Image (cartoon, rainbow, N blue to C red; front, side):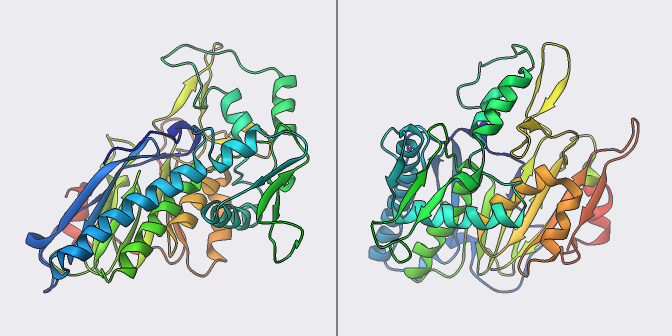
Amino acid sequence: MRLLVTFPTTAAALVAAVVFWCWSCGPAGPSDETTYHYRGEIFGTTYKITIADWHLHPTTVRDQALGRIRAKLEEVDQALSTYQADSDLSRFSRARNPKAVEVQEVTWQCLDLAHGVFEASQGCFDPTVGPAVRLWGFGWDRALGERKLPAPSPEAIAEARANIGWDQVELWDPIEAPEGPRSLRSENPKLELDCSAIAKGLAVDLVCTELSELGFEHFLVEIGGELRCIGRRPGGGPWRLWIESPLPDDPDLATAIELDQRSLATSGDYRNFRILADGRQISHTIDPRTALPVESPPLSVSVIGDLCALTDAWATALSVAGEDGLAWIEALPDLEARMVLRPAEVGGAPRIVTTSGWPADPRPAAMRDGASR
């Protein structure tokens, strides 16, 4: 299936490669000879769904699974697209005073989760950051190619900052606000919403729910590098994943992990930057609190958690916050994080930092040397 490309990849943090990878045989479990792989494109990226117990279900259930996967992806696309004129987010961004737009359940669910991460990250994650992203040349409408752009003026930065702020969005729930259905409201006519940094993760969660409801117990759903693992991998045992090094000439920065009933999101800054007309290199990671590019952001951030939507959003938040943000993750019960930090000085080596519960690389020591596979 090929769906309309609707999510700008530059508005969200660039994902580092995460691949399903096996380095040894595991205990008895679902056979890879009966595994089904379903691939396609959505949100301006690709998706892959691996179902290890496909063979255990009748044709009618398999057909239902494919239909429900397609329908759920289209539902998320229709609700959260910034390209489709009739999506919830496009209607909200286009509306003027007073902004008041009724929204679908999936939009409400997405923004409710976003609200929690915004508050817990002290504003490092903010779906209203779009004006600053475009101002610095990273938006979906940026000039293509290698053309060097001048730095924005202080006045332009101040204007963008005035039109950023999740605290300017009101979520109206009929339970709490009986005068109307669920809706988004704002007094700022220039406020926009872009959920690219959480939508892929949410779509992963929703597809997993569809498959679980149909009785599937062993599968992996991945969209644009954000993924969630359920049950056992083909061949048995936890799902084995490889997180690549953000620096191709330094394989020791790569790692492997095993996951079961967990999600993983990895965000990186090392492949997406721009050179200004004055020669400065700027990061695509924009701090919503200042409307400025983050100076020296992590080379990569990986987050593990139960919900893929939350790992997706937190990977973006930590890219803004840097190492200090790990304290937030330590305080949350179901999240762990790993960062590859830039060298502190010219000629120095990158540094890896993790939260206390980040899983150890399960490969044998001989395989970890030089990060060889």
